[in-house]
Image (tube, rainbow, N blue to C red):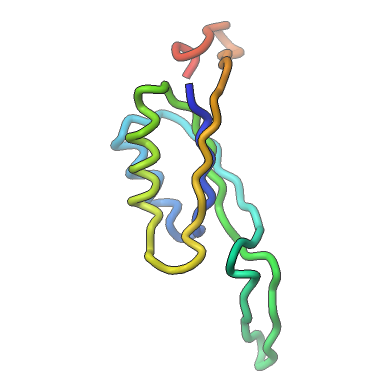
Length: 112
């Protein structure tokens, strides 16, 4: 199993979620996060005053999928989240050793 973490622009969430549903993902965890990468923040104007924010709002999506499905899910997220501009985000893929469905006790891929 693979644990996939995607950090994307917040306005792309609905598009990514719909694409993942069509690709067969049945569940995910979504969090609002803040951070920076190569952008190093952004300058904004509020009530006529210019200020710089060092942490950019992002959306974090977490998914665990079977090994065989992982490449397709990575491609789906990449394609749906891409705008072609700086700050599109990152994908991280980590091996997941075990999954357990608490309600039924099912384990591994059957628990997904």
